[in-house]
Amino acid sequence: SAALERLESPNRFRAAIVCDMFGRLLPALGRYQGLMQQIRQEMMTAIYPNLNQEKMEEMSVFERVPFFQGSAALKKECSDLKKERTRLVNELSEHEDCIIDLQRKIRESREEMQCIQLEAAWTRSKQNQLEVSILSQ
Image 1 (tube, rainbow, N blue to C red):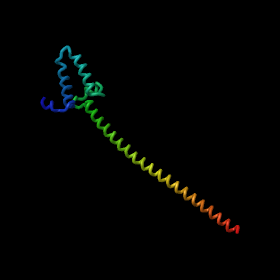
Image 2: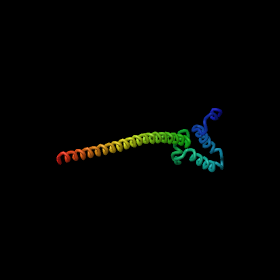
Image 3: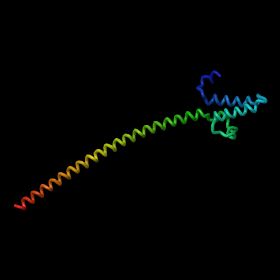
Image 4: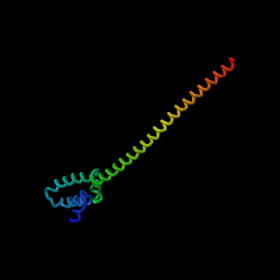
């Protein structure tokens, strides 16, 4: 029992021992056996969720996974998924920054092209004026 005291609580092994011992003590409870069987059943359902009566009879308590162990695994999975989400959000933010930068470069290139087109139009206009001026002489 000193070894059991050192185990973290809740602990899968300790829970299995308590449930097993409770079941073994039931026959010694006489007229309270039925009531205690119902209490044990409720306790087992609380500790080992998602098990119907048939499965409980087939499996030893030492084979079952208590809710707190499943809960810990789900918490870890949730934590891992949150980290992955954060990583993806950061990656998306980097891509969005690249897209914004590319959009800025495209806008600047369009503006530059418009300036070049205006200069070309102005140059053609001046050239046409010179040709008209030479022809009219």
